[in-house]
Image (cartoon, rainbow, N blue to C red):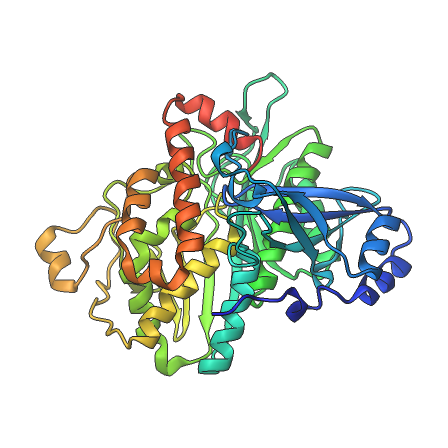
Amino acid sequence: MGELAPRQSNSGDVKILETFLARNPSVEYIRYQWIDYSGLLSARVATKSFALSLGRKDSPLTIPSPILTALIIDDSLLFEDIEVGQDELFADWSSLKVCHYAPKHAMVMCFVKEGGRKDGKGFRRCPRSRLQELCSSVKGKHDLDFLVGIEVEFYIFDESSGTPKPVNMVAHAYSAASINNKYLPIVEEIVDCIQKVGIEVRQFHSEGGPGLFEISTQPMAPLQSADALVYCHETIRNISRKHGLHGTVYPKPFEKLSGVGSHIHLSISRLDKQENFLAGLLENWRALAAFYMPNFDSNLRLRPEEQIFWGLQNRTATHRKIKDGHWELRSVDATANPYLAMTAILTAGMIGLEKEKSLTMKDPKKMVFESMKDDEATDLGILYKMPTSLKAAIDSLKAAEELKDALGPELIDRYVKVKTKEEENFGKLIGSERREMSMRVF
């Protein structure tokens, strides 16, 4: 595919910014935001006047090259990849939102154009650009649309003593007792803040841990859903901090308590192609884990020897079919770059659709709390298991030739390099050190 121009998403329409500022006179600062290959949300804060001057001149904000693909969670850099030159942030003004969790601030998500002197790839490594490009291409080629809803899970916990501690509340999932406490107003404030910017929340409830909650968003187009998830995460962190607590979406904050997922509800409009699409997802799901479970400790929230399979209304399946063309993808966690993860997941599904892969795997039609025996799994066409480590996920990705070809070497090579370095660095730490480091940013 050719290089994406950010104009395709109204990035250059400064009238959106001017109208927004007129309607929100309290806004003084604009956060230019992007998510890098480590899954970290980054921001440059521009004054209102500077953002307007950039917009009116149709100019990007510049950052060091290639900060998008060279920064590790532990704040180390892949120094060998740092180059002379700079990258450019093109604000997508259609994503502009008031930061109701941060007075005077608004945020805008950006397309990142690499301009490094030797190895700049334009927009080809930008996750947000690639997701937009993919959805546009699929619509034009196959008249197919996607909708994505997210189950946003998070812990609220207390770290006033210097050590993370669960809050004191009833931990029964869904029970009324688990929301009849002083933390309910905090969750309500989070939901109110999210809804004020037009992100529709369907419901919220407690999960199976003290301080563990879930907020479900209304399905949106993939790009807008990823933007909404970024806003939700920032709201959770900032509102929790306002009340003297810590909010995290890290997958395993407490060793003996429930993990934190970020389940995706994915729908496709072409029901005649749903089995081909699902076949592509299942075949590549182990390799895709490098994108949707990218933290060193992501696998800690999974059952041992968890198998990859689909099932109708089966919450023990990695792919729960809810109805025709609608699945819940239950393996995903919130340390993933949502743009990268969704691009990779949709690409895998489209491989199945375009190559007309047959869905040979059968629904076991039962809950699977422990792995099925090999002969039973083989009879059902269940051939793969979830990776048990980040290294195993990376190795699976490196072996997935169709997926790698579809995503392209410019994305795959650098992503594998970043995650391999991250795995190496985190492997030298003990679990508490890894948790502390990741929970600072997730």
